[in-house]
Length: 81
Image (cartoon, rainbow, N blue to C red):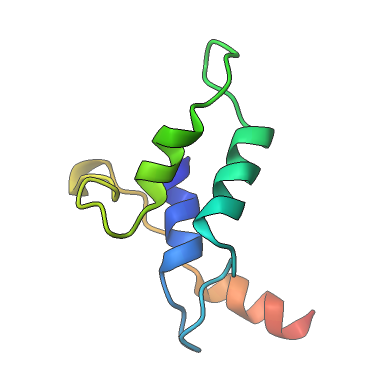
């Protein structure tokens, strides 16, 4: 799930802006306050921060587990709204 937020925060769309104009801190706070581990325990914010950090080579998921997001429909909705 954090990979989805990584892409929404870091991956630029056609207009060169990210879908979520959040800082890593804002994204971490949102993830940790709205999601939990499968066993219902709290998500570790340090781990989330590591995955969201673009400077960490291990941050993005590996190719075989990567989720591809088509961000263009979201861009069109945002323009209408």
